[in-house]
Image (spheres, one colour):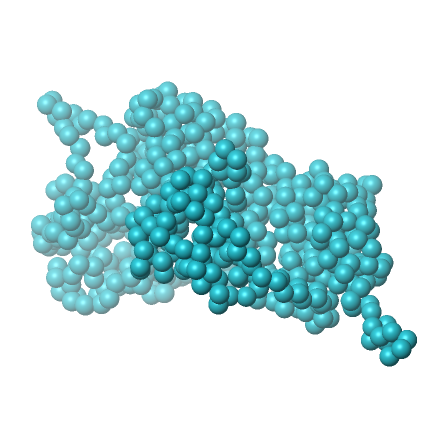
Length: 528
């Protein structure tokens, strides 16, 4: 065939016949785009159908696969019999044909005898008069055909679409997000009865191949009463892994203690997840060692507890002793032990806390260089100028910023807005309006994950730009409070009023500033 060329912008497109499949059209790197993609994923070898040395998939080239799909006895499935029956290749235009079948390839693998029985395709049941019955919920081995299986009149789908439209309008979603959610709802609710709920694991199995957000789909289903979250908490799995190597009696007491820490009791409040991890991590090595020689905590003596903390010093010693005291107090209250072996044991004299030292200029410059985006620069300024914690920066809302009156509220404390912070907030708000003009997220700092909902950004997303640097957001916050104490004098009342910190923290910063401001001459009396 003759070759032709046409211009498209700056590059010349070659129109010719593909050397692999014979298709006529625009060539991409010497072949049609379909064969180009096929070459990238499959090695070259002699084709079992046409005998040519080309990229092959299961011993057949793309041209033979296309021809087998065209003359398949049971489309869209292509079997080994269909491939063996190929005797010629039908010519076609490039970009108008493709190999048929589900994206997962389950039916094709089953037809070629390379799939397990659990992966066997679900075939539709045919009625007695030859008509095809409609299959309902798309299971993990079935592809959803929007035109064939969709039921727009399903009552569940109608209610879910109404709820999704309300959420999309209130949160300012773009048309792409709204269309993605609508497709996910059609896939899940077409043919679905109103009394059956979806579990989270079922949603993952149904929607993982189509790519929509399972979180947004679950939110809509939850609002119409068709969702049940069956996910286990990550902390529960972590705790069970820690208890797996303990003796049964000790593990039973430790499991009850962890449950009391997590959920609280008649006279105890629930503890935060991080606190539970610290307690369990501190007590686990001791419990594992006791499990090698004891079956129950009632066999543990005061000497065992003393030996468990003997090799530790400082905060690690106090941490382990506090965890063991909490465990034995729970066991004593539950009457699983006769006496508390940890009662009356003291952690020993506490070591003097190190003096807080100011950051060097190089460390501050390194952190400043890491803030390359408007959001990162704003987070840096809020920590370095206003001494805001990362958690407080995440939760600052638009309503907390008063640009005309130059006021800013962080963690409930209202303070004046300096010129640097005013410029950074203005620059970030301009960038925010440009990137997400329709978002209704009330928080000041957002990203592409939170622009379509009302959640704050994660602490990990906030601190990632400063990871591995000489100073992070927390170090900048501490340096700012110490700098205020050095500049205005070691006055705890002033520090508490300016930064909203408690009395103990303010006294600690004032004491650190007093030590740094005291010269060697002032440390000696007149006699010396």
